[in-house]
Image: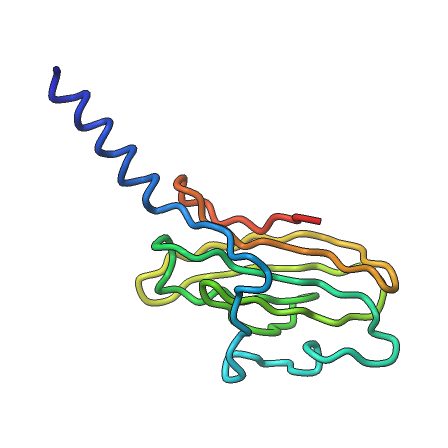
Length: 140
């Protein structure tokens, strides 16, 4: 076979190996307290009946980077691979932002506008597919 073909196959295998994989909800670790900047968001309270659950995939891709989570441009926490956190918020509209950067990590930012109702629980997954584009996707 042609050498170029083997190069393409090898590149595809390497890139596929860089994709992250989901962590089942019960298997994710809690975000360490030293990376929680606004702990009041991690505790349910009167008037904060809506939940935003965030889970970060595990895998080689981006494993050395922490990802900062902000809500309405207020930094809440930094999440690492195979970790999860539930943010308790008042019902309403929010701007959810995910950023990474620093050290060897590229500066990447993605965001979503969301509206959450009283008693509602929205689930978001943080993933890094083989194309290298950091994603924040709503799962349910």
